[in-house]
Image (cartoon, helix red, strand yellow):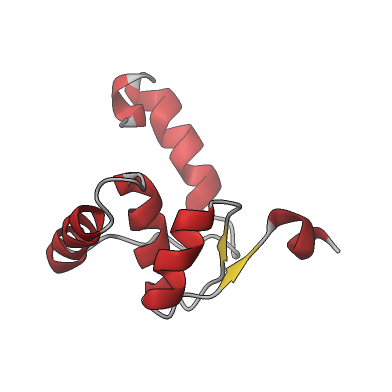
Length: 93
């Protein structure tokens, strides 16, 4: 969903500025080849894992981040694609 269609232009720009000015926020864009890879992985996983979960996995790999999930199938795929994973409760400690 694109927030430009929910907020008016002024409100959208104000909300966007919040993220633009945060030092710990980094915008990450999915490249076409990564989108295609996500579709390929989705197919290999017999559509048992959400396409959006796979996108999050690919973005975590791209940014050398840890994927936070409880999804056992997603964990299995993440391991196959060398993506670090953690349970939410392990991050909060």
